[in-house]
Every structure is written in C-alpha cells, then in structure tokens.
Length: 84
Image (tube, rainbow, N blue to C red; front, side):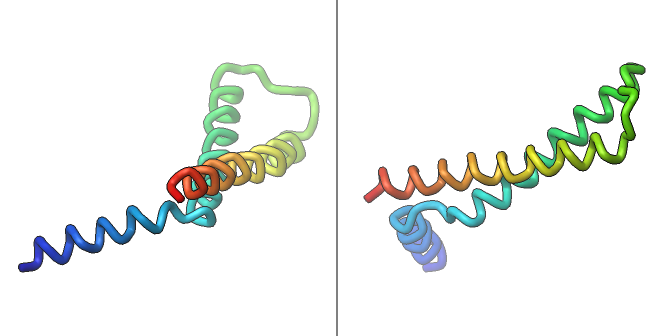
C-alpha cells in the first residue's frame, strides 16, 4: 500500500517540475565551491598573486556565486517551461 503512495507522490512531483529557487541555491553553492577549489589549487601550486588574497577571493566569490545561482535557476525555469 505504501509503495503505491510513493509512486503517486513521485508522479505529482514530476508533473510539478523542478524548484527554481532550489536550483539557484545549488548553483550558488557550486559556484562558491568552484572558487574554493580554484583558490586551493592556486595556493598549493605556488601561483600566488601580488594582490591582497582576501580581496581576490572575495571578488571571485562575488562573481561566481551569483553566476552559478543564475545559471542553475534559469535552467530549472526552462525545465519547468518545457514540461508544461
């Protein structure tokens, strides 16, 4: 009996589409993680820039986090539009 209710809820969720705000949040997290991985690589490879590291990291976070959020938010919205 419970398997049927799970299948029914999956069908309803599939019809509703994906959550655009959830996609935007995940995109922001992925953008921030990409910056952190890039900065870790930069530090461990010895390619340090002559500018202040804090300013450099904050500038990259200010660009990459909203960009990732916008990309995945738009992708989720397009996915919802194509499902209609």
